[in-house]
Image (cartoon, rainbow, N blue to C red; front, side, top):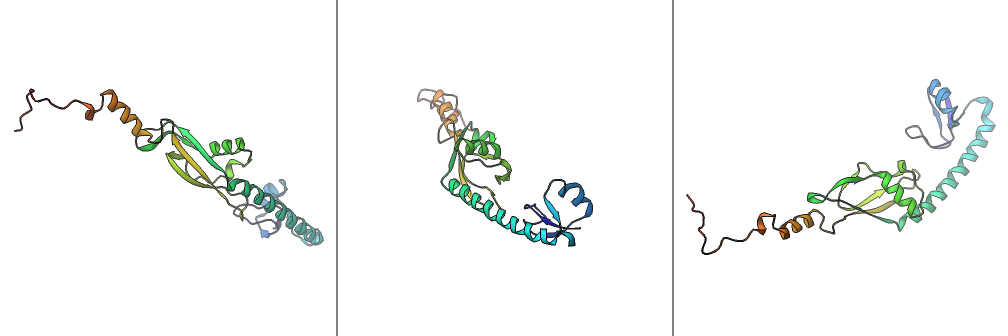
Length: 183
């Protein structure tokens, strides 16, 4: 069955494309949700009108995406987290955390649009792309820092050394004490 897409559908096509899909997929999924219009002889004039409407809608959505993209251009997010050894976080920074931080800054982006392959689990700076439209994919800077300070896990070992629990903090063997003999 040939249909005209009213919206961009991943792995199928963009708005206004005429695509051939299985009958059941069109009848049971696409048509009830209003994602497509049938592309048959009866609806040729309606199809032309629909394509003009889709083109206008695509243009409007692209303009909105460009506006959001310009807002995101200056956005830099900073997350503080507890850090263990070697700068690894005890938790992680996910796309839901990024979505929440963006909302606090007045930018509303759906978390599924944030292209974070795996959650951030280390201290550092990251560029995170956000797919607003297929043609518009800005990136934001996400910085993850330690609650303890810039050193992260190294601060914990320095605190342990000051407390005298680390091996390098033990006093050296004195002159009057007997040194272990090597055999």
